[in-house]
Image (cartoon, rainbow, N blue to C red; front, side):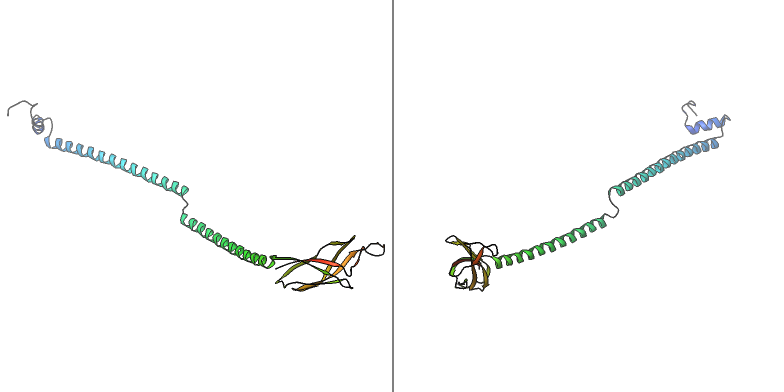
Length: 204
């Protein structure tokens, strides 16, 4: 065989060492293979440990995210939204009922206004008879709301009176006038026969 020991292949080195009695070639090769296997196994175990650690960190992070979501978003958000919607619907129903009630009240007020609207204001004058009764006749009213007796003057005497009866087409008034002479035993007014009396009729 030519060449030096430095140029020899590993197998040749092992054979040369074995020839010199330094190493048995088979155990030496087995020991080298075993060492390489152990080194690879250790590397795999280290990698497995790192993977396990990473998985643990990921699991911890997921738990933290779930906890944070539970704090921010209610667990039963849909139920809460449904409850709010039901409450709003109930409130809308109550508002509709109030609006309907107001509409009905407006209708009644409109009817009342129509019934009490004054469309005729008319003035009439009549002379009282010997019994101080003045009788009035006027075109028929659909409704008479009020008949007032105006205060007037005849000479220095104030004339007034009060309605004693009324219909849709007329009324009677007891005429009164102030006294010229006052007595402590009587009031300041007396019946006013043969005296003009004026009334105002309010109606429609």
